[in-house]
Amino acid sequence: MEDIKLEDIIEILEDVEEGIDYEHVTDLVDGKHLDSFDIIAIINAISDEYDISIPAKDIVPENFNSAQAICNLVKRLVDED
Amino acid sequence: MENVLEWLEAAARKTPDAVAVADVETQLTFAQLRDGARRVGTFLGEQVAPGGAVALYLEKSTKALCGMLGVVYAGCAYSVLDVRQPAARLASILEKLQPAFVLTDAATELQADAVLADTHYTATPVERALQWDADEEVLAAARSATDRTSPLYVNFTSGSTGTPKGVVVSHGSVIDFIGHFTELFDFTSEDVIANQAPFDFDVSVKDIYGGMAVGAAVHLIPRDYFSVPVQLMDFLCDRRVTVCTWAVSAMCFVSTMNGFDYRTPDTVRIVIFSGEVMPPKHLAKWQAALPHARFVNVYGPTEVTCNCTYWEVPPAFDGDVLPVGKPFPHAEVFLLDDGDALVDTVGKQGQICVAGSGLALGYAADKARTDEAFTESPLCSGQRIYRTGDVGYWDENGNLVYAGRVDHQIKHLGQRIELGEIESVAQSCEGVDRACCLYNDTRKRILLYVVADCGKDALRGYLHDRLPSYMVPSKIVFDDAMPLTKNGKIDRTALAQLQ
Image 1 (tube, each protein chain N blue to C red):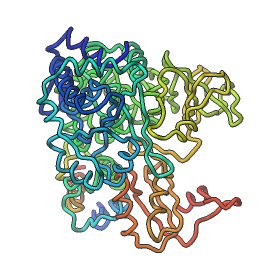
Image 2 (image 1 turned 30 degrees about the vertical axis):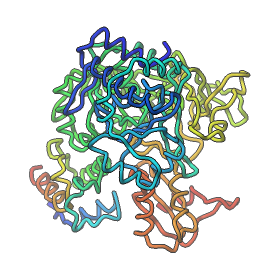
Image 3 (image 1 turned 135 degrees about the vertical axis):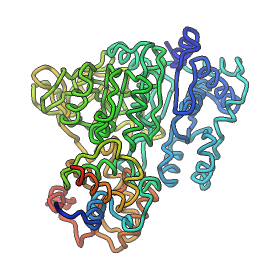
Image 4 (image 1 turned 90 degrees about the vertical axis):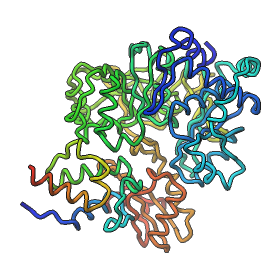
């Protein structure tokens, strides 16, 4: 199983919306840095990249508020797969 | 029928205690909605003359709807303004609209004060107007000053020269359209309508007046629910929703986020979608989840009042092309070629033009743009037509198919955007020499190419201060020079290949 690195997640995020300090921001959704359409773009990108399907119940702000949270979500889903 | 309020009054007489509108916290019956609107109407009517415009700066809610209909009771036209746009853009909209009054609500009041600080407007919370006592005389005077041709609302949309334009729509256009819309799609008082669109979008007109015309309840889905699919699906299921008149982008949200794997709202009997071309794989997910529901593709820009054509999708549709279909009974739809001749050959493209009672009155305080888009028909003297800027063709079944744009307008995240507006704002930033905006349709990204000697962050900040966030490019690319065509114009095709 390939390693899921935080840098790779940040790269995906940069590609969706540049100009955000993904290494440090921890309120991406709650702080309205990302809107629902950015989240869709992120979901599409990570679903393609890691070949996973993100269940509706995991699509909550807590899982998308930081690059680290997204990284943890992806790791968990890849492990469950 | 002369005034949309006749629907509200009829429903309030017939079923006063039925739910008219509900948000997450509150709900109003038809009697309560009418009474609230009459109070606001009196409050406004005492200070504003009929025929003017009133702006509403607030999020959608049951109170917001009292405010909007209150404006109508005062004989004025309402304009709901997006609370997410920067102060500078809001100021240019107010400049065009010249509202006689600005309403907000208690929850948005502080923000309203802040964004209006540099204008000569102040906002009054609708809660204050709701305390007023309705006065029959004030309301009757306002009513007698309006008829079918009076402006009902003004919706602002992106304008290519940098300033948004306000589409002014009359009572008569909404009365005619909603009459056909509710009849064709069998709306009844038993329906439960799930409103997705914000009130500054004309998709919401179909929810608000469609519900009012038949006495059905309209449930307002909070915007935030479109980031949390579990909340959205619970809302649809728990409220036993039957009608979804939604933007395509909102439907794709549900299918992308696997909403149906969590819960299926099987009470939904009809899904009516518009705003963008529906991607077939998303439609397939919806049809599989709701095999007994009707699906209808509807088409039309704000300038024709909601929609001018519709096409009912066959069950388990597996084609690649979704036509936009045939005209609503009140609309006439035809294609014109570059020389203004009628195009009626199957498969041949032309600009989609529309005539009929749905046509907007024009753009607020903008005669030049109005005269350019709303012209006399070259085919029928005296007939007023609207040139949509959309390209289409007729298929072998006599259905209209949308095929693109004649200009640089795009649909992004359900929003209608003129790339020219972004370019013109970028070009006004100090240090920017040339700017060109492209849209990558596959990846749904707005890209901005600039020749400039300012910093990227400075330019990004400048755009953020002047454009709504959905219009700020995802990527800004700096270059030494723009590729040019033989005629010295920016070569968009060459630029697109750089991506």
